[in-house]
Image 1 (cartoon, rainbow, N blue to C red):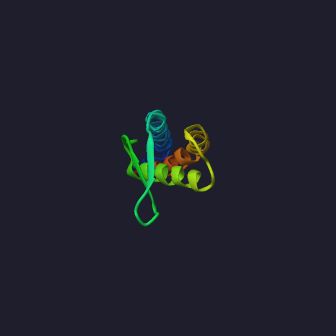
Image 2: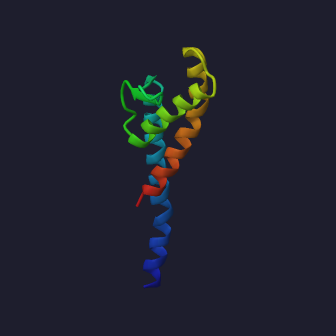
Image 3: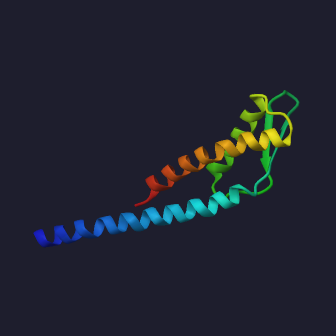
Length: 108
C-alpha cells in the first residue's frame, strides 16, 4: 500500500508538467489568434460603448476582456487606430496571463 502511494506521488509531478505544457501550448495558439483580431467600437443611441470582434480567439472570456480593454483604451483617451492598437497591445500580456491562470485552474 505504501509503495502504491509513493508511486502515485512520483507520477503526479509528471502529469502536472504535461498539463502545464498543454496550457502553455494553448496560450501560444490563442496568443497568435489574438494578434489577428480586430475590435470595432461604437456608441449606441444612449451613448454606451459597444464592441464587436471580427473573429473569436476561441475563448469567450478572453473575447469579452479584449472588448473591455479596447473600450477602456478609448475612454482613457487613445485616439486613432495606432494609439488604440498600442494601448491594447500593451494590455495583451495581462489578458493572456489571466487566461493562463484560468486554464491552469480548470485542469483536473
